[in-house]
Length: 120
Image (tube, rainbow, N blue to C red; front, side, top):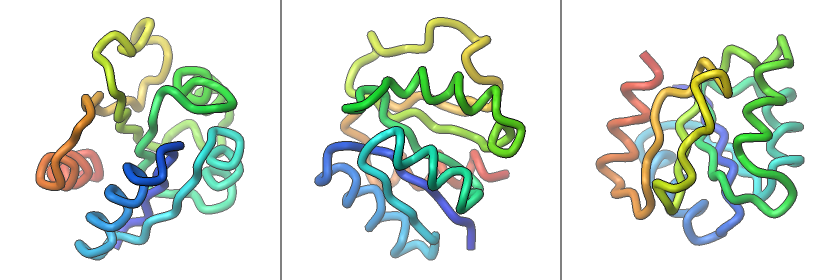
């Protein structure tokens, strides 16, 4: 099944996401910050990225701008998971492969449905 990278600094949320996807057969890779996540993006080439916006080392929007300029990872679809609708993207130019923005808390059912839909 597909490989998914989760970049989320809150360990409880990260484990919730990872566990729910793993029991559905997905291979889940985890990162607690954008720097580690960027390295894992380049090394693992996941099928999709689930990305928090408020990270300790840079914002998720900044990470998306880096991704957009890196040919190796620019095509990876992204689902943003954020705590606030106020964290919406500054504009569509941020990242053309942004599939959805989910507002926390996210249910296991919504998470699974959005991942499945985004992988098509």
